[in-house]
Length: 605
Image (tube, rainbow, N blue to C red; front, side):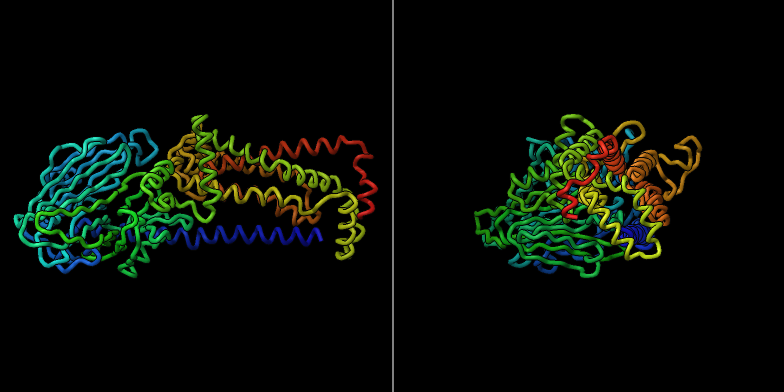
């Protein structure tokens, strides 16, 4: 029976390893390569073809609001000036129109007065790479720059042709700098009796409030829809990780929707009618989201169009129609989040503005109920110790203490199993040719000694959900990005950068990715090996060799995993070794009489 269970366990482990490695080599890596190649082609096309226009907002009449895809740039328009110089740098593009500067403690940028777009935003709190001199993350960029990405707001006519603000409208600003506590108001008059105002405020972080007002000074009523959109030109380079969603995202009628870029390219439009909610585009660590007034029925949409070899993705929503009588005004308010997906901020904004499921912009996954509380616990420990690596170690100790009673019972049973090894060898010699009889005698031996042959599975079963949840925390939360530990580990969310095959940096050789086996994965593998030596060894020598190979296999597999996760596993193994050693010593030193089963146990046997 024991051999049957061990064989099944070995087969399960072997199949799991084959599946994981096979998925990585035959699916994940080829897919990532295809996406990188496609992105390179798109960027090459972007250098030759300048973006000209956008998909219309939902419900817009032809020619109203943003121009339709494929329309030629009008002479003197922004698109025409970009097309005249297909390779301008970002600074040159930003200088082409008057701008209002954005200045906050965590971001800098500007708003173009030509079109009134928020199209320039750098997140000064975050660097592109872990190096101290790395430039800040660029989130939003204007049309004509590399990877244009911007937010736009306006009105769509529901009562015929009207002169409305568009991409070439020259707005007037009442101040030159937008900062927390110092809002900016943009104004424009269409010369036909309509006066438009756009008041933009922001907080100390990443939330903009855009309040639009139109005043009808004409003689006839007009009907208008307010709209908001965010547009992204070009498909971003994706990590290709199946456990992480990157792309369109939204919550409509309290339900989370996450279509992929591929879905959107195939369907072209994915519309939703919803009361409140939000819509956005999410990257691994960044989010641009539009939040309408909650409780109001809107038409929201994910949209895609292809022009000039460029993918254009757009999220937008159209507010209900408003009739503006002569002498009256209409308003439309939108919240724009453009920044880092910090858990604290998303929770704060979700509660403050009653935004449903706003924290789901962070892909905590199916184990949300475990993953998010784990992050909260780690952040709480981090606040006390100031280092996420130390926080992970202390968290590991806390988990071990939490499951100590179960693990202790399991390790005691495993210790008894190890003491039975000589008797198991005798049974193998005596009944080696009769497997059925040998299994029967071994089961009797287990019952007499009170040992459980499956006891070793319990610590692993306990560790698996914690391991996976911690993996998600390290992988998806920006708080772990570029979080240092000590020494060479400067980013707990990235793999250990050292490698055994260049003697940990002593040999000037660029190690291939598959050979990057760092110090911490080796420490993890050693602790796993020692822990196996403390466990009862399989009677079958072939099974014993297979189990002996597992630490080496897991060392190679986990070498590419986040360093924080490998540190957790190594520390957990070390604590398990200490716990097993103490229990084993106690049982070995116990009097012989204490090792014999009680009368009650013999009676049960």
